[in-house]
Image (tube, rainbow, N blue to C red; front, side, top):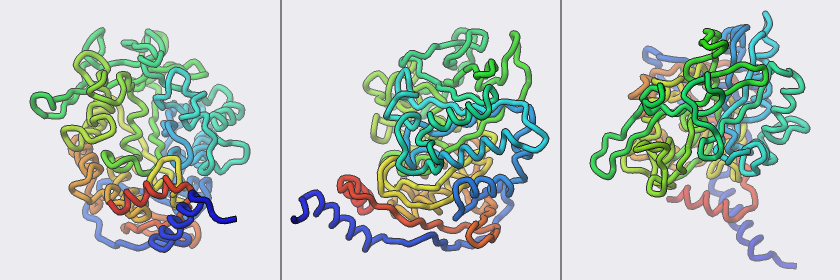
Length: 448
């Protein structure tokens, strides 16, 4: 029996892609350069299992004891809006939580996995989120197939020392609050009700002028701890001073032609309230004249009036609300044209840095772009949207977009070799899949 039209198209596209861009195994291409007065150190581990990579990464950084103290409240913010490569690797995330809970010297604090995936009033049951959708890849743990499975496993193991928390947009059923005395909800920093006025504008004129306000969650853990994301831990009518550590736990993938890539910086959108929707021309405003964090920089699914405003608003959030104590990107799989669908490169890496701009620059330049060959992923493309985002965020925060100021320590688990002061491309074997529409999308992005 002959091939169907779908099979013929798919097989033809696959053969074309294979001939054009096939790669086998893991390889690296060094880009040695001198580091001038480094402002930070970026750590990365390649070629191990997700768990082995994470363990080695934390060891390179001085051990979990140098990152997390015994009494810390630790909020880990993954990207749960997507599944497969769109989510951080579940095994790597579990390993990181286990390292905290079992740190030498003990751990008396709490660990929370929490975020806003903007999937309605009950995101934990949404098949359009990484909470409920079954992972086809990037889980790597027996019997754990999504974030619900992972949080249930951690809950059973660590009881009230662990919590899985969902932040819900006000217009999806969440509450607007003005402080922790009112309980869980979102604080809108519009200067009313005792909340501070924390705003940012795009500097444009007339109809192109837009303003955005900062929003942040307040929530209560299973252990009864009230966490104010901006100001810290609250109990008995006052802030206690107990340390709150914020870990930005991201993945690395293609996003769109108007945004480029999505990773550590864009992961901040899952902290904020996106009430009003993505379209500035159709609602889009969260309150009064202020847009939300998606409708402010973009025109729904296209670029907005001023380049780089995603990086600008997130930089303002980092400066005025809270910035992560550590940024981790798991790149076990890297999405070349989608956060959920193939093709994806099996890049087998985990990378960490205190500087999210340096981290996003490195992971796009040395992981995503070399595997996708899609110019919108190139962080050095001066006309590309991603470069504008990185540059604007760096300008506002003082973070680093110049890789000559970033020291890189890289460990290869296959060869047990540690190298310093060099960047290298991480090329993964590509799984193309057999969805001809997905392959056509990749070809279009690749050629365009």
